[in-house]
Image 1 (cartoon, each protein chain N blue to C red):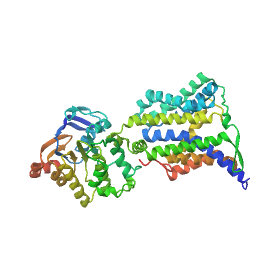
Image 2: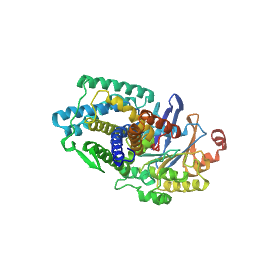
Image 3: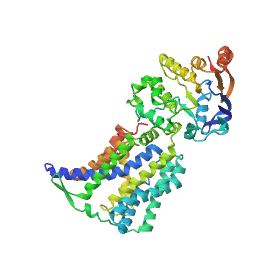
Image 4: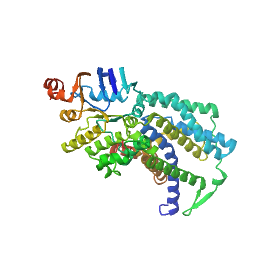
Length: 289
Length: 232
């Protein structure tokens, strides 16, 4: 097995696919935390809502309708959350934020149960991405390759926006020091709102692209929350580089751990998390502010 | 130009300012002097909206000042904090451009070219990260960033804090150049000689109130005020 190139290629692709899904989730959460100093534990619930919206929309207008509109719908939910809770709780400290957003997880979970029921939903993979593609001698599902390409494309887009544009520099300035950014005439509150909505939309997108691979269930947001938090703690809060690095580390450790040391698989990532916290408590690539 | 009427402010439950009043006049430099903990920096942070105004009034150019720091900045006040607060994840160029691109209208007095003429050293460091600068360079960048807002009032908190004497001299000369352009300034400073050689007017703060006002010449001649309130 270890000498089989196909095995390594297959597992690498699996790891990349898991990493890219986690990246879509963690980038929103980490930038929201870095910029707003807000602990939004309900971020995973937005992922679940993205999957449900995608499933419902796909049933009406096909997969692509769900793919494009689910993130918009989740951003809409994000606007409601921001206006109803987040804006009011900005100054209330991390403990109150954790408690409220932890409560929101269960409120949103029950709302999905009320609207969609307890039974798992499924989405068909779109026909254009239904087959398998030959990649370095490995037959790999086209849809999973699509997720990898999508994750890389979104990483590239965010890297460009954050690293090369005026709005990106303003966001980085806000993450570094929001009070000073405000003293330079930057409306940090409005920027927070936009970033929060984009983060929600990306969580919704992650849910929409994950839906054909997983069963869409009310508690899927709860299951993804811990991996997402591990990603941002390992990667470091508030940075794009941290989100991609943490996602890749999680994806590769989890995937290769499961096939090379299955007995240790569930422990490995926590051991790594503990090691990072001991050696570099701020994470590998935290925002510098 | 800027008038503070009996303002009260502080940090959370801790009140620092107890009815402080002062006025900064157009085209002049006002130095705010006082011992550590007297309330000098608290005054500036309250002007900028970084600390809540618990009571009293602040007027800028005859109108009540805005509540939010970004509105206050847009109204024409630039703030250079004691800690300089250069954005570490931005290059020197980006630190300047995030201001220049938003405040640099076609008739703007302060442009990238002009601030780099004022501080040529920054021109050599444009691609460096904000944290790769020396203390003096960070101070130049913080002042340059403030100027790019094309302010009508520039507020500086301890501009010589932690700087070598040669850099203090350079900053002094640059602020003198700015004074000659007619820019109104408020300077909070511990360095008595630095402050009084630049300022036209002086307000001495003690225990959260203004305890003395006068001209630079008057305070230089008044050893009792210097001894009682400044420990000079």
